[in-house]
Image (cartoon, rainbow, N blue to C red; front, top):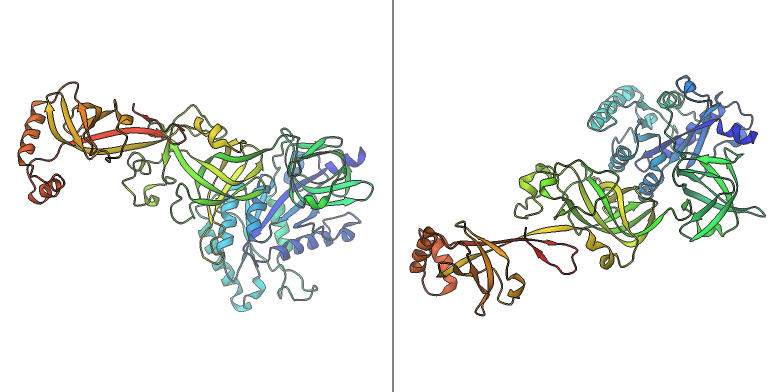
Length: 580
């Protein structure tokens, strides 16, 4: 027990190291770990022998507990764990998977190049997932000595401008040279500015929020077996806590295993909580089956074929995001292709308070052709009844139905990011399109038949025709509203409106050419009868030519229009038409 207590006196603080490929992230992680271990920070005699615990992109170093943290807990030392986020496609997965536990982000920028595509994407991910950031201008050794300070100052200004409208405005920016002379330089070259960076990191630490309650979930980044003991999974606890003798599930293998022992910082412990890096030894299974993945409280994760997500567009993404488009959807620890369908509250609820942690199936929602953005962002399609909701007004909350090409395993309320990872990596464009929170999931393979009907997303339909002639004071014949092959029975009894103001009801078809009878319960007004009488006289023979003739001659009388408006629920198997 003493060992467990000793280990728990270490406060773990996770720092994500992000940046464009080749900005020097790994060299920086190595320089930080080495400088910290060889300096007087780490009084531990094994510190040198430990060297860098570069375990699949995780390295760590220990520091004395800073003064500002001492009153907040009885810790003997501060362990800084560097989460080096590797090459790009996996960057997004790693960050999103581990975003719940990154306490501070280091954005590494090559001072000779400035912000590049991936650095911008890292910034976006940081904004979504992380409360604090430090910017590192790396490779300052490559600047000519005479112009070095001026170049650094110029780049600092540029970065401040870039960060101006983000949650990180005013964040610290520090110049370093993690590996002077580049990757091939001898190891004897001393990194520049790293001690100052360590001081800066210490000043930026705070007491991270760690919640031991809730279901246990761990992201495994390494898995190996120890003969006679079992299989060890190392990783970071994303939520909840775990203790020796607990049963845990490995969802991808559909097996449960008992926790035999655990280690943190190479010391045995009995319990570990959210944010801790831990090695868990469980009863034997083949480690090759689980290189990376998730381990959790049994039956706490769900495997989903589709999900409802509360969404926000990422402002740096150029262009519209259309319904039916396909995106790379990163959810939990997986990235799969998925199709999106956007919807918003019904127009009268555009201003209602957003619901961030649940979804209400009892409400009605309006289908959107695309994600609605402010006017400057909205595409030129003004005629779409739904896409241009309520005269350019944008709802306070929007959702998407995501339909995955293959099922994903994830916890509820997890972060979701939609991106176009197939865009050219060198194109100067942000590939992250939207982000959100998973509110509801569909676990049935045949969810379209069994579950989707309860999602009441409607489309507003709007058809227009013309009055052809009057039968009597209470009946008219209409045309141009239906094709001749339309099954008129479906529309019998539906309400229509004449452009002259009268309300009518469709009684049935008239002849074979798609014409139809309308009954006007309150009768036609004298003005309407007059208008129909005059337009009737002027009408030349030849049916179809009449509208063009009217256009050419600009005749006094305009045809009387018939409007049929109804809504149809997108996922209603019967495709019923509803009128209010």
